[in-house]
Image 1 (cartoon, rainbow, N blue to C red):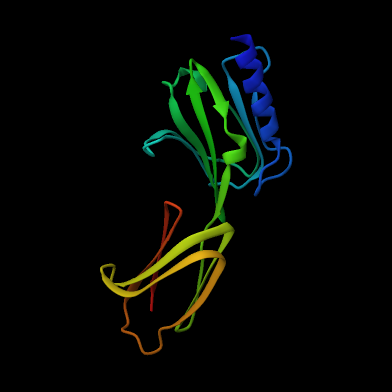
Image 2: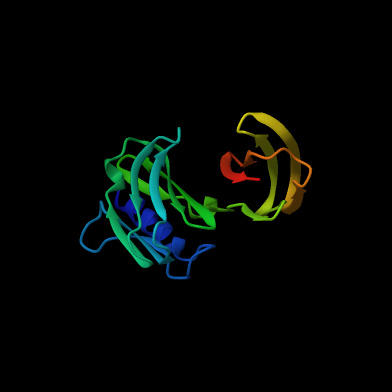
Length: 195
C-alpha cells in the first residue's frame, strides 16, 4: 500500500508543467495528509470554471474562480468510488482536462493523458463572420451554422487538421439570429450572433 501511495505521489509531482498554464501549475498531495490532493494553478482568470466530473460527464464538483492569479484548493479525491474521473479547468480561451482514477482509495493522476482544447474564436464585423479554431494536435472539427437556432444553413467537417479559419459573408443572408456550433473531440462550443 505504501509503495502504491509513493507511486501516486510521483505521478502527481510529474504533473507540474502543463500547456496553457505556467510551469508551476500542479496537483500535489498536501503536507501532513495522505488523503488530500492540492490543485494549484498559476495565472487563472477570474470567472474560470473548475469542475470534477465522472466518466459519464456528471459534474461532482463545480466552482467559479473569484479572482485572477493563483488558484489553490485541497480535494480529498480518495472519497470517490473506484472509477475514472477528470478535473476540467475552463478558461476564457481554452479548456484543460486532467484525467485521474481512484482505485482502492488512492487517486492516480494520468499526467500523460492531460489535454487542452482551444475554444473557437468568433468575430463579427459588419456582415462578415470570422471563425477560427486552433487545435493542439491533429483533430476533427465540425462546424454547423443554424438560422434562428434550428434551420441548418451550413455544415462542414474538417478531419485531421491543426487549425481552421473561415470567413462567412452574410451580406445576402436573411437577417436574424444565427447559432454557430463547433464540435471537436467530444466537446461542443456554441456562439450566437445577430445579423
